[in-house]
Length: 226
Image (cartoon, rainbow, N blue to C red; front, side, top):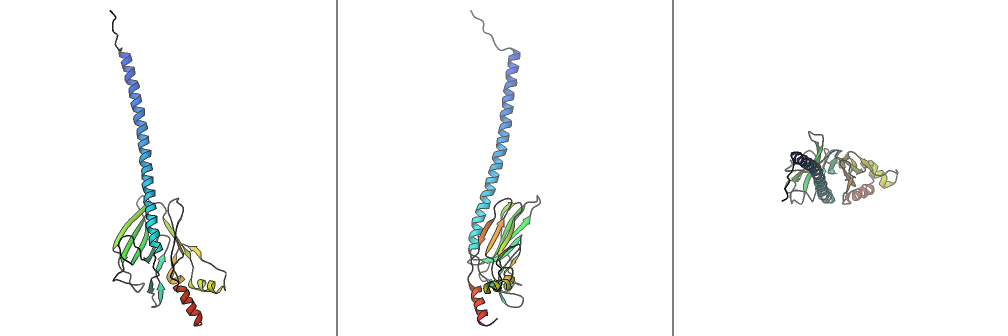
C-alpha cells in the first residue's frame, strides 16, 4: 500500500510567495494600462470636442452677416472687431438659439491651472437690432466650447480703408496681411479669413463671405470723385 505525500511547509510558503508576485505584477500592469487607457480616452474626448467645435464654428463663420451699424460720427460701418483673445460679430447661424440673426462673442479666458477655455456668448437680435457701436445688446446665452493651452485668433484682411482703396486703384502694390487685431470700422470691410489656433494643433481657417457692398461703395465714391 503506497503512502500519500502532501506539501511541505516550505513548498507551500514558496508557492504562496510566487502567487503573490504574480498577483502584484498583474495588478501593477493593470494599473499602468488603466491610466494609459483613461489618458487616451481623455485625449480622444478632447479631440472630439475640439472637432465638433470646429464644425459648429465653421457653419457660424460661413454665415457671418455684413451687418452695418453707426460709428461715433454717425457714419455706417460694418460690425466686426477682434484681437488675439476675443472677437465679436453678427451671424445668421448662431450656435445656441434658432434666431435668424444674432450678435456673438468668442472670448479666451485663462483658468486657474494656466489652461485656456474658449467661451461663446450670444444675443438674439430679432426685435432688438442695434444701430450704434455704443449700444450693443446684453448677451443672453453662454457656452464653454473647449479647453486647451494657448488658444488664440488672428485675421487675414486689409489693415485700413485707405490701403484697400489704393490697392483697388493699383496705386500701391499692397495686399491683405495677417493681423493680431482687426476692426471693420477701420478697414472698411470684414476680414477675409479668421484663424483659430490652440495648443500644438494646426491652425483652423474660417473663410468669411462678403456681400460685395464694399465694392459698390468704392465704385460710387470713384464716380462721385471722392
